[in-house]
Image (tube, rainbow, N blue to C red; front, side, top):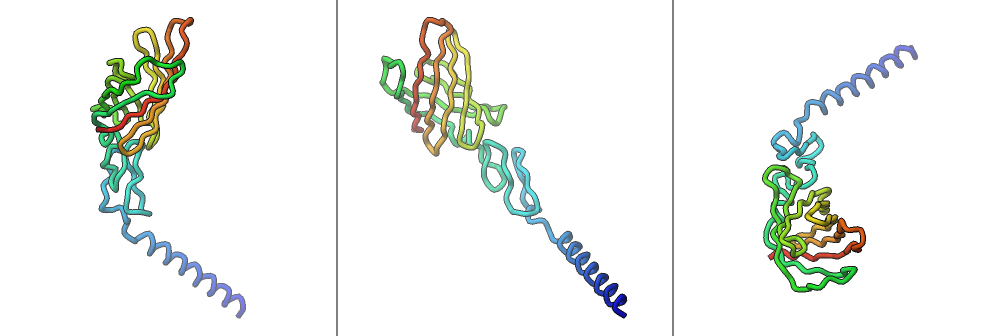
Length: 172
């Protein structure tokens, strides 16, 4: 008799677990109506997408670089050795039309050159570009309407010292 009860109890538990699994497997996916864009992914545990670096929004429809695109008023600070010009200038920040994580900053450091920067994380840009006679390495923190960049100018001539500066870029 005890054996029959144990078998009946085990069968009842097994059927209950099987029923719960089947029921939960048949529940509709919460992301069924969400279409993730720009490489975003959505699982059945939420109603929004998990977006790749550089995108946000319910469906990953917002490009962080596109939001940052525009004209910026720029000024240098904390330069070592000191730089001659402290006059503000304008730079233009634009999203690359092909690469989703690439941006172009024209007139970076008031030199007329274009610096290509990559979005490495949601609020971080980085760049390393060679020009005629020097290399610029830059890391920047991105905020809503402002980019704060720390950069190093490394001249190819070994007798010239590196220049280290910060640039504050404020969107117009």
